[in-house]
Amino acid sequence: MTDEADCVQVDRVPSGLPGLDEILQGGFFAGGVYVVRGAPGTGKTILANQACYRHAARGGKALYVTLLAESPLRMLGNLARLRFFDPAAIPHRVYYVSALRVLEEGGLSALMDLIRGEVGRHAATLLVLDGLLSTEEAGASDRILRGFMHALQDHLGPVGCVTLLLGDSGRPDHGGEQNMADGVIALDDTRRDGQTGRGLEIVKFRGSSTLRGRHSMRITDEGIVTYPRIEALHERPSQPDKGSDRRLSVGVPSVDAMLGDGLPAGTTTLVLGATGTGKTLLGAHFLAGSSAAEPGLHFGFYEQPERLLQNAASVGLDLAGPARRGDLEVLWYPTTGQILDDLGGQLLRAVGRRGVKRLLVDGLGGYVEAADNPARAGKVLVALVHELRAQGVTTIYTAETPNLVGAEVVVPVPGVSVVVDNMTLLRFAEYRARLHRLFSIVKIRGSAFDPGMREFRITDKGITLADTLPGPGHPERLLY
Image 1: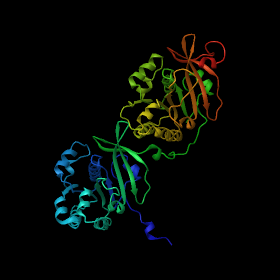
Image 2 (image 1 turned 60 degrees about the horizontal axis):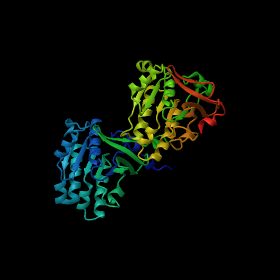
Image 3 (image 1 turned 180 degrees about the vertical axis):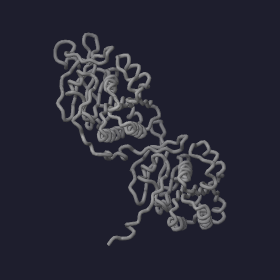
Image 4 (image 1 turned 120 degrees about the horizontal axis):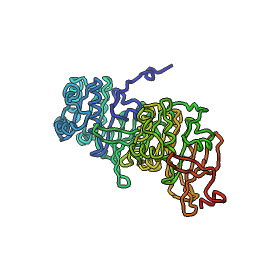
C-alpha cells in the first residue's frame, strides 16, 4: 500500500538568482523555511531582496520584515544602485516592515503575531525575516526559538509561503533554528593567496538533492550571480556520446596526412608546446575551416580578437571573413579576475548558442589562473571534455609547456592528458646556432597515425611541414 504522503507533490518556487536555482535543482519548496547565514558583508541582504523583486516580477508578493536597527529606507537607498530594484513594486508587491521595536517590547510571540497579520494582509508568498541574531537575543532559550520556528512552519507552510531567515553565522552550532529549518544556505567571503572570493554552499536542503560543494559567487550591478561548480553540474554528459566516422581537416594538408586524414570528428585534441612554437597558429588553421555547416569558436585568454585576426592575416589565413559571415565567433577573456566556473559556463553557452562544431580553447593556463584551487582546474576540464564530446564538438586545447627546449614534456594541467583523445607536441630544437620547430603526434585514440617527427615551419602562407629534420642523425640528437 502506498502512503499518501509519498504522492504529494510540492511546488518549487524559483529564487530568481542566476545560478542558484541550478544549484538547488529547481528552487525552494513552497511553504519551506530556509536559513541564509553568513558574516556581515557576505551578501545576505542583497540575496533576500533580489529574491523578493524577482518573485514580485513573476506575479508573487513579498514581505520583508527587518529586525535590524537600520531603517528600511536606508536599506532601500543602498539597493537602488542594483538593477533588480524596482521602486514601482513597493508597497503593493514588495512590502517592508520594521519589527525591531515589536520584538524588543513583546518578544517572539509578538513578532509571530505581527508576521501572521502582515502575511495575511498582503497575501505574501515570500517572507524574509532579516536579523536572526536579534531573535536569538530575544529568545530566552533554544526551546523558545524552536517554538517560534515551529509556529512559522505551521502558519506559513499550509499557505505555501516561502520563508528566508537571515542571520550571522555567529554561534558554533548555528542554533536550533537551523536544525528545524528545511534548508541552510551559507555565504562566505574568503581570502586565498592574497585574493578574496565570495562563495555559497547548500549545507542542508530537505526534499531534494542539490549540487554539492562551495560555488563561487559575485555581487554585480545585477545583484548576486552564482556559478555552479562545473564538475558537479556536468557530473555526467547531458547526452550520450554517439561518436562519428567523419574527419575534420586541420587546414594544413601535411598535418592532416600525419593524422590519418584529419582529426576524428567530435574528439578533443591537446596541442602542447613552449611559447612561440605555433600552437595558436595551428588552431587558427583549424578555425579557418569554419562554415555555416561547421560553426567555429575561438575561446581565448591571451590575445584580443583584433590581434588574433591580424596575426592570422599576416600568414595568409582569413579568419575575418568567417567572423563577418557569422561562421566564426572570437571570444576573449583576460585572465585577471575570472572565475573558473563562469568561464566553463560561458564556453558551454557559446557552444550551444551557435551549435559550434569547431572549437579552439587557446591557453589552458587561463583556466588554471582562474581556479580558486589549482587542483580543481583538472577536474573542471575533464567535465568540459566529456560534455563537449557528447555534443559532437571537435575541440583543440592549447597548453604551454614550461621548458623552451629539450626532450622533457610537462603537461600543465594534471589529469587532462588522460582524458583527451588526441595529443600533438610542438618543440624547439637547437641546431647550428638556430632554433628549429618540431612537430610530432603523441596519440590519436582509436586511429592509426604517423609517429614520425617533422620540422614545423611558419611561412607567409601559414604552416608547412618539411619532409626531413634539420641536420644529420637521429631526432633525439636535436632534443638534448
